[in-house]
Structures are given as C-alpha cells and as structure tokens.
Length: 188
Image (cartoon, rainbow, N blue to C red):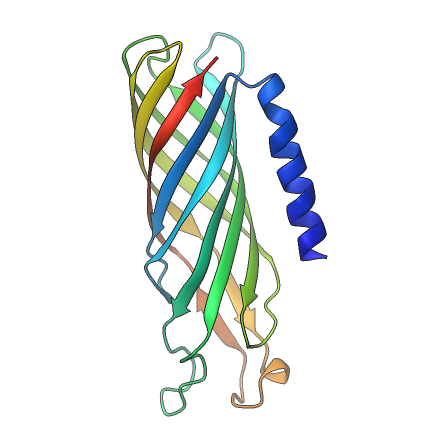
C-alpha cells in the first residue's frame, strides 16, 4: 500500500511542472526529538494564487535510515539497531513578500502526510502532521534562485506493544523538531 501511495505522489509531482511556476530541488536536515539528525532531500512545486503574493506549495522529501534514539524502557535497547525511513509529503499555503525582486522572503505552513517505516522492526502507521516555515530566495526572479529555509515539523507515531515482544506498553515516537532546507528553485 505504501509503495502505491508513494508512486501516485511521484506521478502527481511529475505531472505538476506543466503548469507550475516554480520547481525546486533541495537538501534537507531535520532534528526530530526521537531521531538522531535525519538528512535527506526533496522536490517541490509552487503555484501562485492570483497577484496577491499567496501561493500553494507541494513538496515531497525523503529521509533514509535515520537512527532512532532509544525510546521506551531504558533497561532494554528496544530500538537500538533500527533505522527509520521517513517520507513527508507536504501541502502548504505560502506568502511571498517580493516574488518579482532579486531577493524574496516568504512564510508558510500546512499539512504533512508522513510515510513511516522501520527496517527490521515493528510496523508503524503512517501519520498526519503539520509544518511551518520561513525562507529567503536570492537570484533571477524569472530563472534560477538559491533558497534557504528554516522550519518546524510536528508529528507523533506510536509503536503498539502487540507489534514488539520486548515492550509492555505502547511507545510514542515524537518526531517534532526543526528543519533546514537549502536548494535551488527555477521560476517559469
């Protein structure tokens, strides 16, 4: 099921550039509470809403093999050797302060759907969360621009005790934390 949903999201992203006014590719760093610094990358598409400065952002990121800090019972290293794959797919509202200038500052926020998978471990349910961000773009307003963005992601997942014999109670995995994106956006 997860592969089907990821495939559909990729197809939607692949079809989007035909009418998009911005395509971005970026590297991403995220520091969730339950994970040792997740590093990854992503792609995004931006669509303006009229001339108001408001727009819509659609993004997909990929964080592979983030190491889970020990959660749950400290006497047993329940998650010591497990890696966590996180794929957030975001839909956000964004406001650009100066989209036509050489420098543009923007703010935004929205919802994220998180595809979560632990290798060699229990199943995790995919979760819905939120994100907020502030950023700056520098460069040609009708071509390539570099951007730097800081933000915050919030989501929590639960490992059920019936999925893992080593724990007696459900274990919450808190994935709230700051994120930084650095990349290039092409405006057309």
